[in-house]
Length: 339
Image (cartoon, rainbow, N blue to C red; front, top):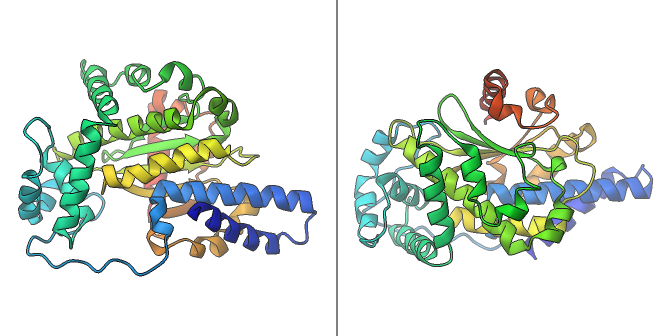
């Protein structure tokens, strides 16, 4: 319901600006831009960020987390938040493995609310022991196998994904791929135009696709936290490439993204970095300044609308995982676009 309201506002703004065009063109562009922006915003923040009303008043506590900037040294951030992390450690059951970095992310997400951090952690633990157990276990085993020889075997990870036999036919490295910056941050790249989302959703349910994306997030979480133990606190940067988009996303596919996004912030707090909306068509780029203020400030701060020539030049995303030179050019391009 929230996203539908947001979409109506976007449509009205675009409708006024496209009034000089024929109605069919205007309607098509309105639908595309509204869905793109709403879905992209959901990747940057959960849907409850769109709710109105007054924010909750921060609770005062002696165990107060200290925020950090992207690229901060893990050792320093942990040192500043040691009391909070040690307090959260008491919540973790003996049969569950959660490192200091896992707990640190919950502390950072609730800098003024220890009780809120503990509640969020308990909810995440509940999910990991019940609904999400198979996802968590599969991701853990897949990462262990993928890194067994000191490198990364992506096929092992792909094959272990939930419902891989159906979904992998549609979500391939041509359209979705994860790579890394030279500093170690993960870059999750999606080119929606190369996903036949309608046919995908005819073969798989919303729940199955949601599980697939949650598995990807768990893999990102494992890798980012492991890297964070050795130096800087790593984040996941989202790069949504709009190149080639000619139609609005399938509503069922958008629903799956919304569902996984809603869980993302609560289960993996402080993991996501900025969400970049890259290579919008020129006609849509002209509306960014008008449309961005329509979203909540918390979403605006994590949305970046830019042109990415290196990414746009690729016919598919596969070279980002096979060609070191192209990968380096792209990741440096991404870093240069960060706010």
